[in-house]
Picture 1 (tube, one colour):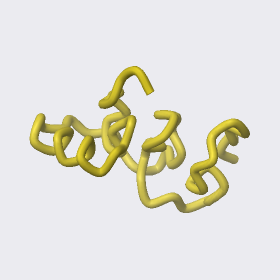
Picture 2 (cartoon, rainbow, N blue to C red):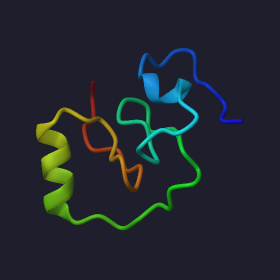
Picture 3 (cartoon, rainbow, N blue to C red):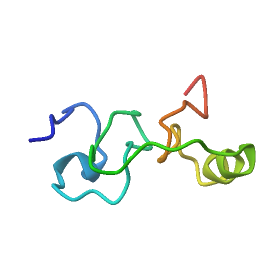
Length: 66
């Protein structure tokens, strides 16, 4: 079972089949079945524009100071 982080409001923590590996709000792994991958800076820039604090694919922190 995936451990749930109660302080994060992202609903992927409650899903058994989350469509992403990492939570965009806290960076915790939400689906261990999806392999982590190396991202490009262009993908990270797109995620920042979508206001994701962490990358959905590699878990890297994208936005600091929030």
